[in-house]
Amino acid sequence: MSFPDFHTQHVFIADDDEDDRLLFQEVVRELPYLVHLSIARDGEETLETLRKMDQLPDVLFLDLNMPIKNGIECLSEIKQSVKLQFLPVVIFSTSSYPSNIDKVYEAGAHLYIRKPNDFFSFKKSIQYVFAINWKEKFAQPPRAEFVLTV
Image (tube, rainbow, N blue to C red; front, side, top):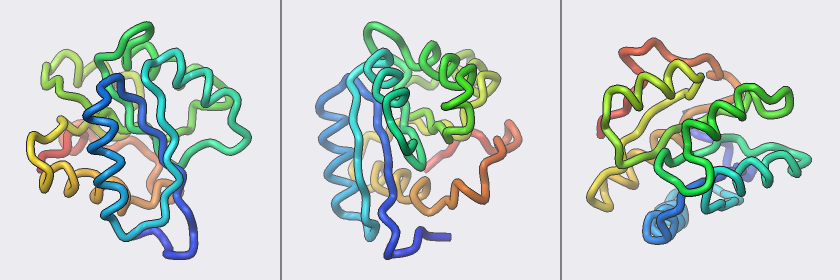
């Protein structure tokens, strides 16, 4: 299911890697969606920005390996916050350690995507997430469906 063309989606990406942020922006520009993109470089900046927002993003793409406050710490605070707890969080990381995947699943993330190495796969994974209607599909999937492989 895709987002309606007339509705701008608000997407937030938290990633300390400038190249990954730029690639994410490039992919978003190529997709057939109207997108307002917010960006943070670390977990602390992510939490500060989210707490100040009047309207939360439709989905947060969260990297795990960030300075100041990592993605696992950030996710934990999000899920403990009354304001932020229902924000859909997609972990978007280079890490494929099963222990990290288990931690973020247990902490309440909605999807885990290992950052693809090529542009086409990167675009395909982002497009998959954009096609989800998060307002209808908020529940965390079963563990077997948690990791997206592109």
